[in-house]
Every structure is written in C-alpha cells, then in structure tokens.
Length: 161
Image (cartoon, rainbow, N blue to C red; front, side):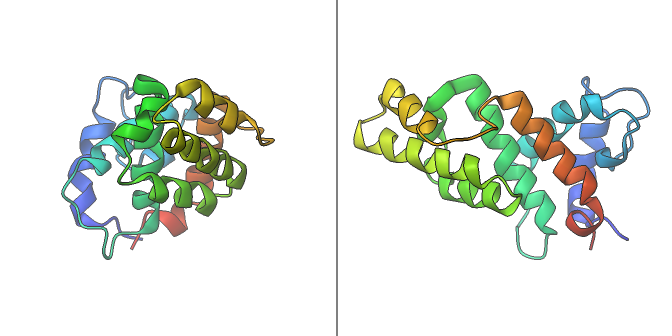
C-alpha cells in the first residue's frame, strides 16, 4: 500500500505538530494511542481542507477527513455560524457524514442548515431544528470518536492508492 505523494508533506507536518505525541507515525491512524487521534485528525482535516491538493485521484478518506474535521473545527470555534463560514461546502459535509454511516448527523445538519437559511442565521432556531431528530451523536466528542474509529478501522481502504 502506498500513500499518495501529494499528502505526505501534510501528514508529516501533522505527525510533528505540538499536539502529536513523540514518535507519531505519519500514518496517524497507526498511532499506538488513539486518545490523541481526534486532535491529529482535526489538524489533518483543516490542513487538507485549506490545501491546494486536487481531489481527483485522491483516496476518498482524505476527502472525507477534510470536510468532516474542518467542519467540526469550524463548529468548535464558531458554533452554528459555521454554516455561514462553510456555506459553499455544507452539502459536501452532509454527504460525508452519510458516507461514514452517520446519517442521523447528516439529517440533523440538513434540518439545521434549512433553519439557518430560513431564519437568516437564528442560532436558537438552528439548535431547535438540529435537535428535532433523534441523533445519538449530538455530543461532539462522541461524534469525533466515532469518526476516528471509522477512519482507523477502515484505513486500508480509505488512505492508500
């Protein structure tokens, strides 16, 4: 299995970042201690999202990580204003949640985004709409742990050429 050459510099930077434990492999999904993986995947997602790397030919795991963890980072810093920050890519985020098996989160986000649009960004309305559907992953740490587990468990089919 081979890593795509265009992502190696990003993986190297993430593995050497201040949040990475000493001796973190560039294939961060192979780290011995997965308790730090949320931070590592968050950094990877943000770096990939902000990179100029073309999606064409890139293994789908990198694309999913870019949209999902960049979105989670946006939500951490901006709350529901993340909808305004990522309006151009919110459908990709929703589709990515569906792709990893978090349809409940995708559906809740769709409802939240509809409320965002129809109320001109009323965060109370967004919260109500988001919480209207049953979703066992409304707590961000639970959702991110699910995501990390998904990527670690499926790394061979998601991150290699």
